[in-house]
Image 1 (tube, rainbow, N blue to C red):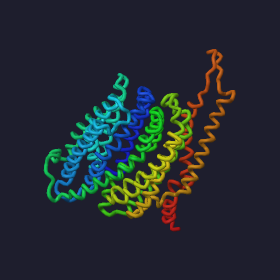
Image 2: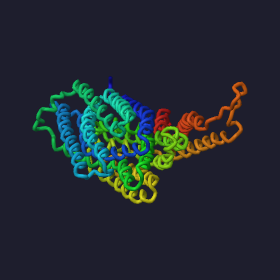
Image 3: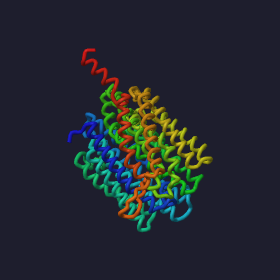
Image 4: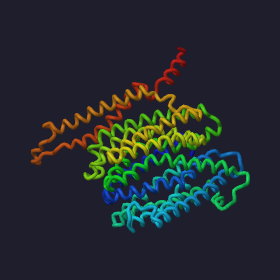
Length: 512
């Protein structure tokens, strides 16, 4: 299979869509089994796991993808890169696992005292090791530009996790069962991933000494700075959950985590673009194709903005009816934080292609300063708003932190040497968004008005009863395709998708 940016994107986007569909079906089942309190506890445990895995795997993951993709003219380059980062991954995984165990034993982790809660972190120490092995095999496949292999494994891992997590939780193992689901799924995918990798790199390189001429310092420097950068980046969507735990009930944390899960559905396509671009951009930077990088980043940023805006509008319009049906009526407290999170989620989505291109460049200091500024802003806003406004304050603070991310990184990108927003077309996109939002709002009002009218029920004389019209059902059926049609039409009418370059090319061909 010949690999191109398009085929790579299709592979990764298809996998993300597959995972999103799985999550859409399975998450509410898991939430209902665990309940608000159990799901809130799980959210807190995973909020500790997230930053830990950044320290354990972020630099290894980024370095594996970047340096395997460069394919330098050095003997056994890819084997040596894989072996080097795999050994590093093992060391970091063992250190991370040991840190968890020591933290529990010494009382450093003592959010909820009790043997049961401590047991969750013992399991998390095992999850850390298997998650690291799963990640290194997945990232190595991506770095070798084998997305058509890595992404089906990604979906399979998620499917296995949900199957085992839901089954074990249902059998009464609760949060412990969910963590065991992580372990079983990650162990299975690690074995499969290494078998598939063995066809492209030598697994024996794991046990061989790295050649003297191998640029260890360069790779270690990138690895260490990547850890700092990704730690700051990921803090943007973990700090709020951890800080909430100190000020609100666990049940409220569950509501907020449920809102985050729904808001992050907007990241399906942006994550796919980010995954494709880091290895592709690494090769372009290595070949000094700066103009091509600028064009690619600018177009990707604009398309991501358009796509996530229409999805955010749809979620906002349908949230009041969708959330209670999706999670259960007891999760109505999720609606307001979800709506407040949407603008920031769009901002984070826009930042993703910029992050991948800048990261591929390897100038990590610029990345760290830009991300650090957004992370500091996020922490300060959460500290100010959570004590007073609870989960709504966390949603506002996090949303503003997300929005600041692309702004800071735009400055960083210009310093690195490219402009990812040179063709963003803000006026056209604003007109498209405003028009689509107004149309969707009017459509929603019209559907709700229908329920208040005499047409809300249909008499069926033969059956001898009346059938009520469900406004939510009509909205779920009508609004998504109508919104897509309206938004798509406006993007072409305003020139948000095509326009300046296409028209100039046409005029040149006509000799005008």
